Length: 115
Image (cartoon, rainbow, N blue to C red; front, side, top):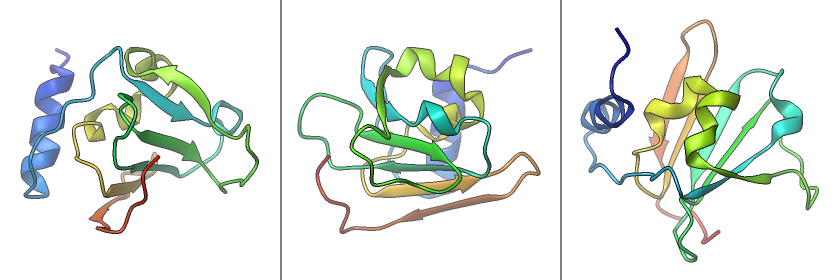
């Protein structure tokens, strides 16, 4: 039985003692689609300034190339990288690193710039 993604996100927020800030399916996220076959997976939620979710997600090394991230509606992230869905309710300033072997590191950095 599949769990409700919003409940999984609330559970992660409770685990890390923070509030739940929904990432709606119509929200945009930045996804480095060229890195999907790499590991581990990284995510950072920036301060929201434009109505997007302000999530940026990539695998492996990050590039500074201006076309590294592509805009993707949050509703489509599960098709690309389902392992990150449960982290999308974390508020701005949170980051994560996860891998397929079960490694999980989640932390808050208060000095995350606006997207």
